[in-house]
Image (tube, rainbow, N blue to C red; front, top):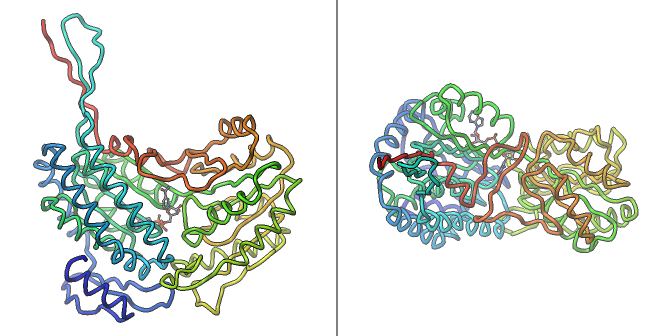
Length: 486
Ligand code: NAD
């Protein structure tokens, strides 16, 4: 279980009661956290201002001097303890996540496992050599490359994976020897606070992990302007990513940007159609469609187009909707802007000639934040849904005739995060894999993520990679050392 606060929180969430007794926070406001399935108030969280954001950097900067020179084994031990505590508290963390984010409980449990896997991975990665030899070009000198922690890191995370997006960054930074200030999304502060409680309990020294909740522009703006913050790792929309890129220029921060996606899902004749349909359902409707890896555009080869449309629509019509604790296939969307976006993408596509095969409206029987799982066919390339992230349960299907055409259409996007390809022809698979301008290409499957892989996108889907060795190296600087033996 978590600490007293979180224990009470979990009890109250179970009863569907409200947490309102956290005391007063003079000078600062409170943030209301609402259950997207019901609109109920789940909790009120104290919010910080620019002064507190600066205080957090002071604390992280002070802690850096000690933490950055701890033995890697010491950092690994504490990371292993954090991992064990996350796994122990899995059910609580999953229920907190459902209450504030709305995702189905089995997906929330899966996310906790995924979040914990980064902590375990970087506990081990922290022990790998951090000094590399260089073949000398001088007769009287030897050279080494040292990897040193970059300094205080600012970590900014979204609401769709409220635990995993924090641990994917934080565990890598901690393993490297950095201290940090974390700003989670206003929609999901409780998951972030619960992880912070467990980090403190695992034994990270004071000032190493600092979680600050408040107005994003104020808090993050304070950090982007602070020269002591040496790295900024952001996961969120391309729009905000561009802004933080600009803001970080002034102090020349190291950047990792994990931004939006607009994944093409391409199915060729000869593919295993049952499998393609099953994987398409996962690629579109996991996390209720609110996933940067979510398939946004389905390109189906003409000989199998009508068959795919029929089978896919039949599978979509079987999907269940409901509040996360009832473990449906699809939960609520996070806020009404998401609902408006679904409706506008559907209406726009239909106005431009698309056929609505199923769904297309708010599922009012469930509540205002539920949208019917929707399939559109014959969607034209000029429809907004073929260019913008939909981030919801609306699938846009379109027909193609040949390989070159579909490669060109798939690449005609400012995004380049992930592409899905279904085919059983190895040469075709090779050609597609080479030609697609995406940071990740998934062939005949949907799940690509995991702690050991470098996750990230090309083009305006971002800069840098998270996960794998690269995720830790993003929080380090290379120091080149040349020693004279003359
Ligand atoms: P968002 O960009 O609105 O917010 C992300 C974070 O930035 C939040 O913490 C938010 O508080 C903060 N933020 C918002 N406005 C800000 C501002 N003006 N200044 C500073 N910080 C600000 O994104 P979101 O709606 O929370 O998440 C959805 C987006 O995240 C989608 O575009 C999705 O594709 C993307 N995403 C990408 C990945 C990936 O790994 N590439 C993973 C998950 C989500």
